[in-house]
Length: 545
Image 1 (cartoon, rainbow, N blue to C red):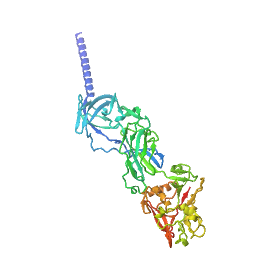
Image 2 (image 1 turned 30 degrees about the vertical axis):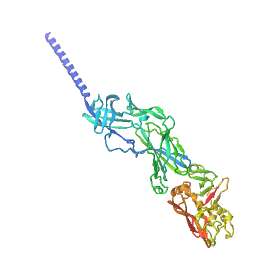
Image 3 (image 1 turned 135 degrees about the horizontal axis):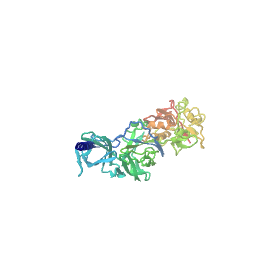
Image 4 (image 1 turned 60 degrees about the horizontal axis):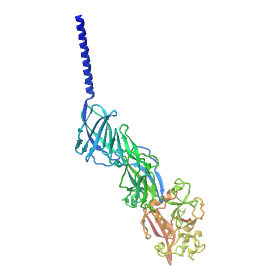
């Protein structure tokens, strides 16, 4: 009996020892799982657009086209290059941050303090480091004082869109103390406008605003999903968006109107919150003359389709301005490029309008031959009643109309035999060729057309198409000749530069009336010169509609 009791006692002791050993192992395992390490932090404040990959292949929306008076604006919204910051991995001025550490969605640590270029100073009650479990993966969230904590979410108002910063990184800890660099980025995004053109740009005035109460007033950031959600909307009040004159060399920088090499960038940025839709933002142009008339139009949405802007994004509203040349259509209407078959419309253009007040236009093409101004029998004789001794007078006090000298017999001198209407007299090929110009399509307008050889003075009306310096005489004057060419070539016509053309104006003195006014149109300049009747030049007819 004693032996059995002794054995039972020993068995109980053994079980107890096993139990104690098991508890001891559990405690050791628990202690091992909760082993911590000290984690210190540094902060890098990224610039706007720092995460933009400008070379990535992403589909871009079609530019928006707006016809506004004498200009056509092509609007696109593009990601701008990253903001250039000082080459450092730290902050350059004292900044106060809150840092939170999450593991599996649960908050495991928080600290607050001020980062400086030389170190970190924790707020009262906080350590300079955070104790976290080893070998765990944490989501670290940092934010500055422009951000308001709302539970685990972070709220930002539109007023703080420029300066509010949040950083979110997932980092796996090791088994040793370490320092982690956190990258904080702007919550807001910034917008800047740039006007581009093939000619030099003057200073312009405009305003920036929202289309009603459609932009986020506050957004809430959810670290668990890494997303922003608008919680209230508001109106962006009208704000100035003025741009200076371009600084590129006039005329030559764009190869005389060939390339969009002139730019004017508004120096001011506009700041909005993420999820703001670009289609709810607008620009209103209120002043400045790029082409012929002062600007006065609106871009009612910076995008025609929904385009939410992202946090820390830097955007450029690229506005290409081109002149709205005016055309005479085959049905008698006057319209712009977009109304023609070449611009997506239904009308056929036959001439470029030069002066709507006097119903003056110029043909899209030259005639098919380049004759002398008259037959040899008239090379030295006066044939016009309004001949000039000096071509300068033909631009001022003795200016005449080519339509009169082409069609009015009273403008033909008595030296001329045969038909006094030069349009009908084969001895004057340029007049006859211009009068019989065929635009290639039937004209159905109410008023019959009169094609004619332009006078020396008439040629001045093409000069405004090239936006050059104002001609005071017939010397060379710089202009954007390639832009003039575009007026013709974009609707199927032939470029007009690199040629000299006949005019109807006769120059001379008794005994020598061999001079004729000519117009020379080059890519870089426009000039009115004196030619000779026996020379050969092309004909570019004008038309009265």
